[in-house]
Length: 144
Length: 144
Length: 81
Length: 81
Image (cartoon, rainbow over all chains, first blue to last red):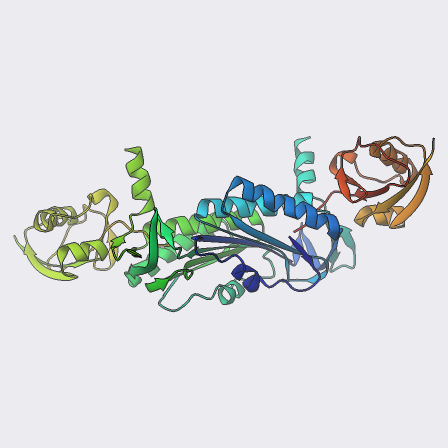
């Protein structure tokens, strides 16, 4: 698990997961898009508490590896100000077969999004800004 | 859908799917690994009937796009002789949210593997070689 | 009545047939009929359920009718990726 | 008995508190007690169930006891990725 304020390079990160025993590679990237919930978004600011984000991210990756022995996995998350189209988070997984590559990649991004101390603030075209609510809170609220 | 006898370049292919409205990107790669079913594999030969592989691949991608409007997707498959560690197939999908990116990426690779006229022959360390049985046939046989 | 059919074999089928293509004159109504006759001829085609057939470069059903001059592609079970 | 606690706020909590860190002298037994007192103080903290707390850089439970000199990090609901 890595936190960075520099652009993420998926091509270089992918190569770190290459392994002669791996037949499958699955990656996920979160990109900054120009709309959210109907608002025109101009850019996004990520605030992170890096020391604990790294520890919690390592835990998530360790959980995935424990579930699927032989798996290799890595995750990098940006912080700071990001422009439309930039990559905010990257997850890469390599494994023997594709089943576990997809499941583990999905598990890691889901847990990273909901457990790491990272927050995002959207800056809108109309000059306003706002902190983005967490997905799981919204999902829980919908069930309340 | 593209068939090629040249090395696949995931980094360049990914950039083709960038879109200001896309918040999620999922990719899958099939890599040549050095073992299969307990045999030490030295290299793999892919035979393809390209005209129909492309048509059928386009159908698969169209099915994914129909299911998830706004999705962008692309797939490239190698043919010819491949060495251990090389990328045999690449699938990339971008979409608004990550749910559909994962589901569509998985759908495309599953269908591509089972519907396109592509066959692979493994060359083993002991000098033997053999055509690889299809996954779905094996799965059906197991249920018979 | 006998029809002139060009048959193309791929992968394992090509190796078993010992050729990638042959022109045959056969009395067959459908692709399934053709497959059955070729099984007798080559002895080693897979169970048809896992195989696919294309007629004149279009994926077809096994009960598709064959016409004189058709090119039939016989695909063994696929395993891409 | 009153304890000296350093509280650090993040994201929305920082904006609501108007500061990223404050040292407080409070009579609190657990992180939950602290959170409740700060809700009265700042009036606008989220429902605790969606928030997380770390004590001295370790993720903690809300019923974890606080000791004199502890540094408590208050995390509003997260939304990474």
